[in-house]
Length: 159
Image (cartoon, rainbow, N blue to C red):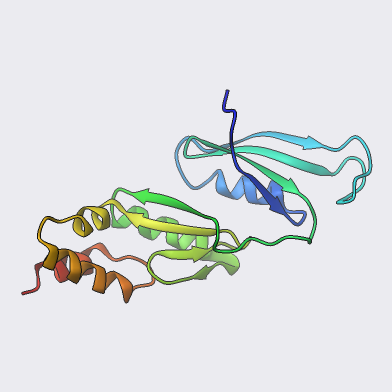
């Protein structure tokens, strides 16, 4: 049993978000939907109060807490992708229906949650023993929104 996991504050759409996030990666699913047995500050008895869900093996809880708090970039979730196809699939899925692309592989999904969609190859190139190659990769990445592996490799190999 996981003892520590993030609880994400939603404004009435925790179940919708959990169902969406459960489609993103293998080992992702909604685990439990808990409906409140009494009226609460965020809604009447019978409404969804919390949703326990798993994304990529990581447990989360969504709380329908109301409009008092919103997500911001101080917290983001990083997904390390195996290849460009996975980057593209996740980028398209997370920016759909009102999500927003950001700089350097960052984006916000339609619920306002921030994600970093990062190809494994970026880490490899940034940690290249040749500091000049790593510098060129960093400079290329800083100009990107969605990370493009082919462009990173071209920058690394440029002379």
